[in-house]
Image (cartoon, rainbow, N blue to C red):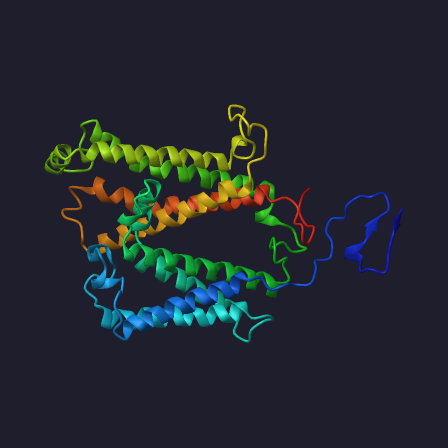
Length: 361
């Protein structure tokens, strides 16, 4: 028999100790992520305003350390800095609206759309493959090799990343969903563990295949087959030992892509037996989600840069040397697939929400 207290129906407690399906969520508390996003975007907008007024150190466009990689290769500080400053200051204003308590008069769709535009602008124009390339310097502890432009790229990406998290929190807060897990009282649908296992598996396999296609060209060059490049280009790279280095980097990327299988395999949830000291223990969510999320962003921005350079005509004889540049243009597929597989992994393993009580236990 169930004893009903004076609490609302959603807060009923069974006398036999069974846990109800979900409990009434506590009052909504503001998360600090919105204010952090606002401060980051405002700070960076003011920095660009300083550069627009003649300050030294502008990192983009013609002032880039490697302007040939920039989307604004021939655009100087005087022309570019005011536009970038305006973009970040407007984004800061949107982040402020997302951070303030309650619902704004501005339609939610407009705020989320502005967030999407900010993310697209940063990933499509300011950020590029050098973020991924400089990651190798970090692992080699060669911090002096990281240039000022890359530091600014990272700050820009982090800023819009925080803005995205703030928009997600706002959307949950204003639609009645749990601010912690995003669940509502309705059916979980595509976010349920069973559904996430199905589409997450397809995404994970896609995220494995794409980098292997890229690696196959580099392995072919190292083995003496000029796949997708001219004999002249292959011979020049052979003399400089570039293909051995490329094969080594491709192998590292391929091995890393195989780790993506952990997002859909048992060993990605429980440490295998051969891992002494950890075997049998549950793999922490963050151990898989954080690196996979970072890689998905970096390979996506790198792929977008190669697509942009193709349209800009930056590559010599792209038809004859397609193997050197075309495989990178499908990296956004890799990045999106990896991001989707990571989200599916989270949906499968997140369990019951400690805040609202919804979800399997």
